[in-house]
Image (tube, rainbow, N blue to C red):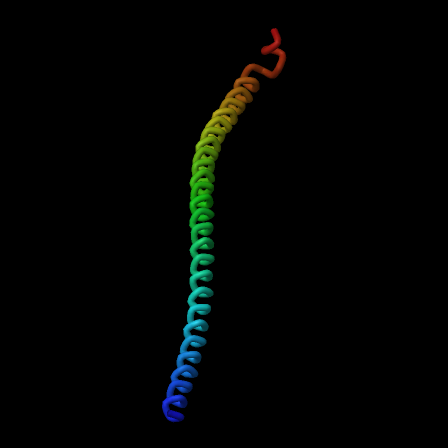
Length: 103
């Protein structure tokens, strides 16, 4: 009978240790699950921010293309103005200066 009591007592102690280990594992799993949820939230935010940056990059690229086209037009206009100014200067010289132009 004493032997049976010792066996039962040992079984109870072993069960208590197993329960404590399971509780520790459960706590660890809960922490890991919380960490996973937090990482998933951060990943979602990062992806959203990435899409925002991609849209901004596309808009900037579009603006750059437009500004480059405007720049090319202005260069063409400036070259035309420069040519026009040179032609006017040549005409002005051949006309004999400002006197002929004002008559």
